[in-house]
Amino acid sequence: MVLNRERVLITRRLKMKKSLIISGMFLLVCSANAHADLLDAFANGGFEGGTMNTNSFNSKVPPGWTITGGTPDTFNGDTDFAGFTWDYSSTGGQFLHGIGWQPGYTESALQIGLGGLVIGQQYEISFEQAISRSTYSETSGYWQIKFGGESQNSTVMSIPAFGEFKGWEWQTMIFTATAETQTLEVIAMSITDGLRTDLGIDSFYLGSPGGNPNNPNNPVPEPTTLLLISLGLLSLAGVSKKKQR
Ligand SMILES: [Ca+2]
Image (cartoon, rainbow, N blue to C red; front, side, top):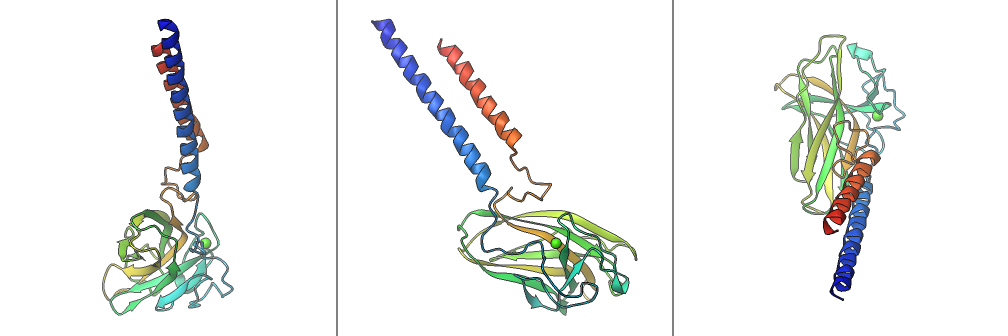
């Protein structure tokens, strides 16, 4: 009788463990899928779809973006007027060109009304940046990114020699939402007041941390990782089963 009762208890415990493991695995798969979501309201991080002449200072930004300061331009990897040398980013096509010439002149673009944010939640902003030296360029520069009330600076890119190009290099930033709807702004900055820098930005992502599939610096959980975690959980279950025997 006593033995039978123990057996029933052990079977019950094993059943509970099994269901815990299965729900754990389910949660892991769900969280991996949630990371793939890009913020709904955000548009055109690839700076594509412009119909302007990309081999000139066209003073136009691609669809989804609005100019806030100066006259940023839409370029592509072949843009080579005025001594410029550029290349295509990892996601290709067009990109945004901005001049930083502080404090008197700043080129910037924004997207307003990015809603659906969760206050206190972290969001990843990642992008590729580049710098070129035209006949007008004088100094090094960086991108300043504003999202809501928070502002972060990218790594400074040093001005290359004439005819040379530097980039595209990935930048990853984590912002915390302080409102349900926020404005995003990208601002070209020179490191020296009174001297001009010419910067490029492309492959812009705003969404869940780790969710940018193009960002090579992101530890995105891959199917193989999930499989390994599942196998680990199963072997743990095996060990506890043996112990109970
Ligand atoms: Ca692009």
